[in-house]
Amino acid sequence: MDVISKNELAKVACNVRMGIIEGTFNAKSGHPGGSLSIAEIITYLYFKEMNIDPQKPDMPERDRFVLSKGHAAPALYSVMAQKGYFPVEELKTLRKVDSRLQGHPSMKCLPGIDISSGSLGQGISAACGMALGAKLKGADFRVYSILGDGEIEEGQVWEAAMYASAKKLDNLVAFVDNNNLQIDGTVEEVNSPYPIPEKFAAFGWNVIEIDGHSFEEIGNALKAARDCKGKPTAIVAKTVKGKGVSFMENQVNWHGSAPNAEQYETAMNELKAVLSGLEG
Image (cartoon, rainbow, N blue to C red; front, side, top):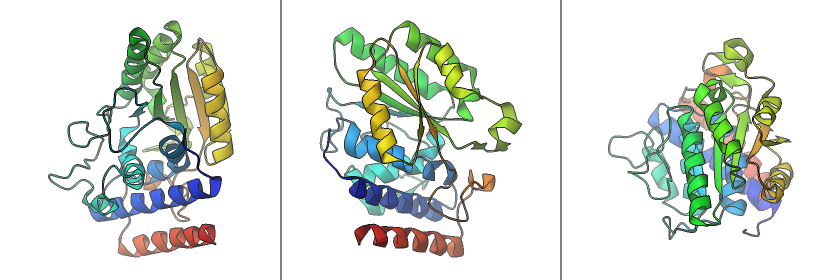
């Protein structure tokens, strides 16, 4: 596990948010809202928790990451660029023809992507397979996945949840990005998955509830997940959709809309101000 301070993590997360805005602005499309909401979670995983090496993206002993909510690819690409998998400048090619940064993660395009994802519900099933594979091989790598709260309305998620519990996949951690908004409105309005913690618990999971923007709570939850034996862990993270950009926060219309030039400048100036404050 890497040694990095909370302040350094916060700076990385801010840069990740700037990369999300950069990518979606240049693409003129994409999903900024649900990408911004997972910035702290994905930053902690890539910069502190996971055993990974950008110079050896396919090393067998690496931990695996599955972005089950694949439309949040701008967040994944941004943190990977910050980690050194590819140049930050390449974020401007998001969704362009022949770009390695497709609208959803593609393992055929970009080294470091462990599974192509985007069909909601399928990613967590792939994560279960990876975790089971580690058990069968006697390998000690761990598998981490991020799901959306709208995504867990998919029945396949609960088949995977049942399977993970039945196979005692205690090397599997699933974050639920509970920002309470999906493409058509609030999750209650569309097809309420609440109460989320009780559902995972009923399927035999170890369940932890956190503030998804608190590095301390993310770290404590991941430690508890490592300490839990015989059960997969679900970390239900309360988050804010569009977090970090004032006019995007808690606004459902930013689920799948890109900022225009004026909005881009506003967002980037806000984030630069935050970064400046962190740098003292």
